[in-house]
Amino acid sequence: MAWRTIIGQERVKRILARAIAERRIAHAYCFWGNEGIGKDALALEFAAVMNCEQPHVDSEGITERCGVCWSCIQASHLRHPNIQLVFSLPAARLSGNTDSDSSSVPSPIAKLSDEQIHIIQEQLRLKAVNPYHNITIPNAVQIRIASIREIKKQISMSAPQHGRRVVIISEADAMNQEAANAFLKTLEEPSANVTIILTTSRRDHILSTILSRCQQIRCDVLSDEDISTALVERQGVPKEEARLIARLADGSYSKACELLGEDLQQLRTEIVRLLRVMLAPRFILRLTHELEELTGKATGERDRVRIERMLILLLTWMRDAYTLSVSGGHQDMIINIDQLGDLRRFVQRFGVHGNLDAAARAIEQAIERLRRNANIILTLITLALDLRRILYAQQV
Ligand SMILES: [Zn+2]
Image (cartoon, rainbow, N blue to C red; front, top):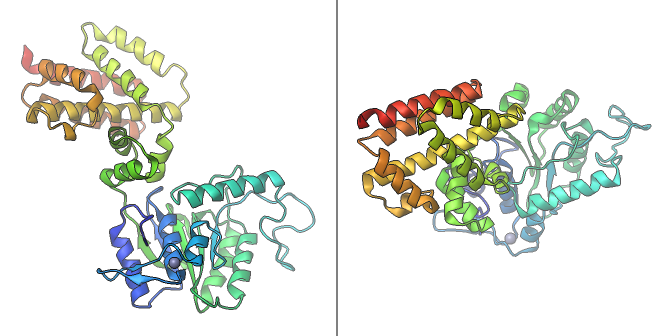
């Protein structure tokens, strides 16, 4: 049961499980690594395991939580009194007590509007259902000193009768300077039976004096396989679609979940159509026209993300064509299985000696160029020229 909420991260799980088994739990951790790979999920699970009332140790020596005790149930609803999740909140409305008034400790949410509190509750509900959910609250860009004071208050309370008090500061790089300085003082006076876990995808934005007081644990990017399996099991996504999304998700399960709402089939249809234009006679005029249509509503960054996604989809498609050309097609290796007919026709026409492999590499290079901020239209025209050179080369 324990750790089952976590996708991948076997190495990190073992480090944490060993700390529990050997009773060497640090006072402070920093879980760092790319966005959406499960740093919060790991922190929440770690906290839940430490608080389970009936934990047991499996055959590999990993401590598991039972999943059914009062503590496990509270933890899974993010309602456990020992486990506190801290994240960015909107600024309080101006009135009397300001951020710098330290005479009392107002709750960080005391001055938020009912609507804001409602949004926060809804975000927490989503986080409880899916610990990979990114908490997003309008105008919440900073972790403020009121949140750090709340942490101090929690820590100063008497030790829990059972388990361990755990404070998780999600995206801790969002602490403003005042909060970070106050937090540093908290770290300098560790309390018994309390663990603080910072999570961050921007470790270089955290004070080095804070980092040096934490045990730093790097979390890994997820494999495509881990992501697609999780999409199938958790979100009920059909296997083929899950593999397509995993390719686009850059090792981030949160990003994969965001992509669920996107019409990838439509994007793929558009890019495969564009490929046909690229390979047609007198392509330059038509291609330029198509590209102007495609990027016409030039919205900058969004355009770039969209074209990049389309190219990644084209890359999966071209790799499928390559797989078909060399293996005759073990169908379970084909990602765009619903396109099998089109793929076969493409391979018949162009699948001569390694050309498709070179074509896939040309698409990879185009994606690289886009990521390095190259001009979108120029990148696609260069790609068209490369693909024509590669795919027509041996047909002359
Ligand atoms: Zn339990």
